[in-house]
Structure formats: structure tokens, C-alpha cells
Amino acid sequence: MARDIWLVFRRHMVISLRNPAWVMIGIMQPLLYLLLFGPLMEKIVSSTPGFPPGDSWQILAPGLLVQLGLFGSMFAGFALLGDLRTGVVERMRVTPVSRLALLLGRVLHDTVQLLVQAMLLLLVAYLVFGMRAPLAGVLLCLVMVMLLAVTLSSTSYALAMLVRSEEAFPALLTTISVPLLLLTGILVPITTELAPKWLYVLSRINPFAHVMDAERASFRGDYSVDGLLTGSVVLFAITILAVWWGARTFQRENA
Amino acid sequence: MIEARGLARTFRSRGRSVEAVRGVDLDVHAGELVGFLGPNGAGKTTTLRMLTTLLRPTAGRATVGGVDLLTDPVGVRKKIGYVAQGGSTAPECRVLEEIEIQGRFYGLSKADAVRRGAELTAQLDIEGLEERLVKTLSGGQKRRLEIALGLIHSPGLVFLDEPTTGLDPQSRANLWEHIRSLRDEHNVTVFLTTHYLEEADSLCDRILVIDHGKIVAEGTPDELKARVSGDGIAVEVPAESVADAAEVAGQLAGATDVTTAENTVRFRVPRGDTALPELLRAFDTKGIPMSSIQVQRPSLDDVFLTMTGRTLRDAEEGDNGA
Image 1 (cartoon, rainbow over the protein chains, first blue to last red):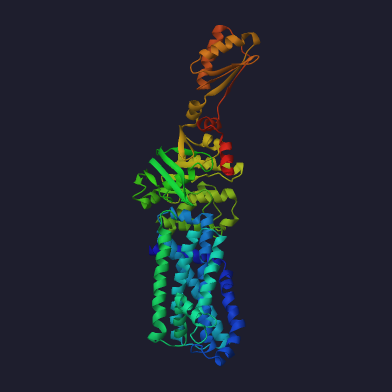
Image 2: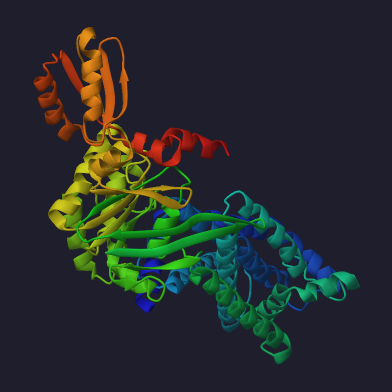
């Protein structure tokens, strides 16, 4: 099983490394937000009451990491659709390879890819904008980003397996990820002071908003139960759910 | 090698259930090259996907390579090779990468996978392409690579789904040679599907004809043709001997459909090749002179027509139009 996961992981890493441009394209959008929107935030954050503690970069950078996940890992299923179309998935499913490994090897690849993108993004924030954040907090945040990648890419593969259409898939993803992204408050946090009540309530139903809170807390060095507990529990729960769903879809005899 | 009984598969879509395969019985013995012939949509691929563990039958049972399909699908996967219809390789991968990972999925070491891959690429005349990206291969090369992937673990049984579809005539003829040599030189049992009559005819030891999810005929190409429609014989004789000739022809064992024209007698017999000597002797005895004699072997298209009431081409067009 571990060997199978490794083989699948390595295959996808080799393909990614052959076209590293895609890693850069994936990071372009959050990078642009960082460069063209970030400077705007500085004054707004300092002059508007209601923002969570921390300076603008400590609020924006973790938000962009979530965006990276929602628009990066969430689209991982595209590669699977390509492999379904070319018959690669079917070929592998006729071999004795573990079908769970076919999923987990891909998820591992997507996680590593997101981690690399996240580190590049943080590096720019750190070097160009002098973002200040405690190392331990950043590392903790990266762990959360990894779990987020596992969650989102597993979900994406499960959806791709069910939808099986390269036309319908992007439409479905956009329908899901845009409201999720907005209700997570990646640019402007959805707090009780800033948002109307109904919007705040809606955002509390969105699990990613809780993960967002925990990421921001760890980024500003707040390791209190208040700051981290809800987000961590939610993150573990959605990770387990997503992997379970993905595994079930991949192992179905007729998938 | 394969023994299937009552294999069936029903698909449900939009509240309607479609019986793609309705109770297929089939036996394939070791060393055979068996063809599954039928129009598109007849249930060939669905049957193949069931036998290769990609699709769970809704009814029936089967053993494949001596392993029970329903209780031990992983065991079946270890025993068989499968080459899918629409291709099975990733355009962005190098040939050697595909070979290596395929071998390792079957439990070979990296070195063994590479060694076996080299054997197969030589056998299939695609050596020297190891470093190329799959997307740069020609259609024929890609198909042979995919066959090599299906054989990487030296299976005793290989399933080829429409192996020559989409290939140019030259590549097709070339692939036929490779498929024959699998059986002749490498003792691999081959089960292939095709909707090309000439392919089934020239390649297969035995043919199963499938239509609307059921096997409608089975036998060697010659048996099928003999059983279903027989050979057509046309004898040219002087006009005054036509009546005598027709009488002689009608007395031949199994002769049917005797018709006469101005100076030609036509009729059908189960086997033209064995009927001819008898016919010649009878004409000789009666002193009927002949100017020419022709035997028209029936085609598998005749077989399909007789078994299903339509030609293979009509069946395909009908299905495409539906």
C-alpha cells in the first residue's frame, strides 16, 4: 500500500516537474492579490474598527493560503478527468494496485504542490512586504494548509469521479468554490463588527471560515484554545470526511 | 481460461434500466484466439469490462484464469492483461515511465519491469522510443505500447478491446501479425472484440457473435459460415443442359436454393469445397459439359445477416441513429 502510494505520487510529481509552469500559474492569482490588493489593506485595517488583531499582512496572507487551496487543490480533479479520458485510470484499475493508493498518491502530490506554492507566496510576503509572523505560527499554519489540501483535493477527485465531464466540472467547481471563498472572508474577515448578522451566521456554517480563523490566530502567534480549537476540530473532521468520501468513490467496483 | 455463465449487466439511467448484456455464456480455452464480433453497442465492451473486473455483473458468474471473478477480483487482475479500446496511456508521460510503473503495479521490481519492457518493445517493434513522450508516438506505436503494458506481467490471458480501431490499414495488418504471434510464439490466450468482419475472419480461431447483449452464434469462422448460409456455387453450362444440370445439383447432399438462368445454375451447399468433387463426378457421369464453375464463400456479414436479420453495417447505423 505504501509502495503503491509512493509509485502514484512519484508519477504525478514527475509530470508536474516536467511542466513547472502550472505551479506558477496556480500561484498567480493569490500573488496578484498580495501585490495589488495587499498594500490597499494596510490603511483600511489600521483605520477601521472590527478587524481581528494583527496587521494587514497577518490577516491577508493566511486568507490567500486558503484561496490557494480553494482554487488550486479544489481543481485537482481536472487531472483525473484527463486520465479518465485517456484511459489511464482504467488501465491502472485492472492492475492489482490498491485503488485507495491511486487516490492517496494523487492527494499526496497535490498536498506537496500546494505546500510549495504556499511557501513561495509567504516568501514573497515576507521579503517584499516585510510581513512579520512567528515561525512556529507560520509552520502551524502550513500544517493546516496541508490538511486543507488533503481535504480539497480528495473532495475534488470524488466530485470528478461522479461528474465525469470536463465541461460540467469547472462550472460545478466555480458554483461551489466562489460562495465558499466569499463566506470564508479571505480578504476582509467576516467578524461580528464588520458583517451584518445574517452574513456572520452564514459564514459560521461554512467550515472553512473556522479553519480561516485558526490560521489567522496561529499566524499572529495566538495559540490559545479560543483561537485554535474550533478551527482544528473542524479541519480534522472535514479532512476525515473528505478522504473517506474520496476513498469510497475510488474503491467502488463500478467507478 | 474463461468460463462465464449467465453473465448480465443492467444499467440504470434516468429511471430507465437498460440491459446491456443479457445472460452471456462463454468458454475460452488456453491457447485460443477468440473473437467477440458484434456491432457497436451490442454489449462487447460491457462483457469485457465485467470479465476484467472493471464492472460488476448484475447477474451470473465467471472464472477467469481459474480465479472466481466475483469473490477474488484482485486475483483475476493478477492473471490477466487488458488493453482498452480508447487507449490507456498518458500523453505527458515518457514511454519508459509508463512501462516501469505498469510493471511495478504488478509487483515487479524496477529492474524487472525495465527488462521485461525491453523484451516487449523489441517483440512489438517499438524499441528505441523509451525516452519519447507518449503524445509524440504515432497511432500504431501507441497501440503497440498499450499492448506491451497489458503484457508486462506475462499474463496467460490478454483481453484486447477493438485493438485495431482507428489504425491505418498498414498498422492494422502489422498488429494482426503481432496478435497472432502472441498466441503462436508466446502461448498467450487472446480474447479480443472487434466489429470488423475481416479481422474476426482472418485472426480468430473461434468467433462469438453478439447482438443486443446476447450471443447469437459461435464457432470457427468456417463453421459459422457453413452453418449459417453455406457456400454459393454457380455453374455455367450450355443452355440446352441447364435443366439437367439443375436436377443434378438438386440431388447433391444439402443443396438448397437451386435457381437457373439462361446458361447458369446457382445453388447453395453447406460446404462448397467438399461438394465440388461430387458435383464434378455427377456432371461427368451425366455427360453435362461445363464451361466454368465458381464457389462463393459466404462472408461473416452473411452470418450476421442470417443470425440477426440485418447486416453489420445496418446494425451500426441503426444504433448510431438511435
